[in-house]
Every structure is written in structure tokens, then in C-alpha cells.
Image (cartoon, rainbow, N blue to C red; front, side):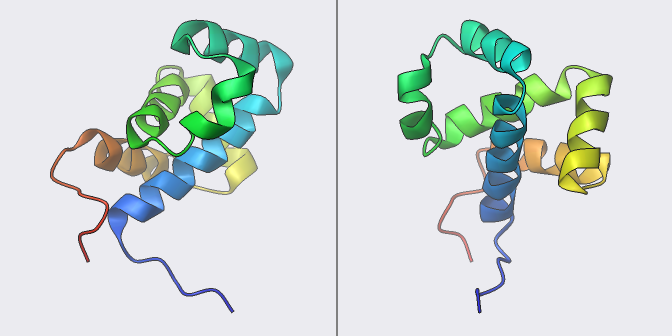
Length: 99
């Protein structure tokens, strides 16, 4: 059984990784994201371990209401939860190791 995650930063990173999977699920959306982020498909997996990159994933999702709604539906998250994850990843006070 997995241990529940309570750290807001860790939860936000999980949401961002789900968003990255959502982006990767549609070739056109993935191509746009890769073009805008400047990374290549071969470096995507390594980039996913970078909190700043994860914040940029949620930046991409949050900039368009239709994309937020589509991701919310697929991930079964409320849009406000996605926005909260985005805020946590963009807020420097949330350190990864804070209990």
C-alpha cells in the first residue's frame, strides 16, 4: 500500500506529472508544448524531475480554459485543484522537503 502524500509540493508535482502525461497523449498538443518549452522529446523524461519544468507544464495547461477543462476531466481533478497545484509550484516558499 502506498503512503499517502500530504506535502503540498509533492502533490503539486504529481498533478504536473499527470498534466505532462495528458499533454503527451495528443501529438499536436505535445508538439506545441515541446516547441514552446524548447526541449526535445529525448530530454522530456529527465526534465520531468525538475520542479521548474513541472511548473512550466502547468503554465501550459493553465493558459487556456479549454485545456484546463480537458485535463480536469481526464485527471478527475477539479480545475481549482489544478490551479492550486500551479500556485504551489510557482511559489518559492514551498520547498520540496517541507513536512
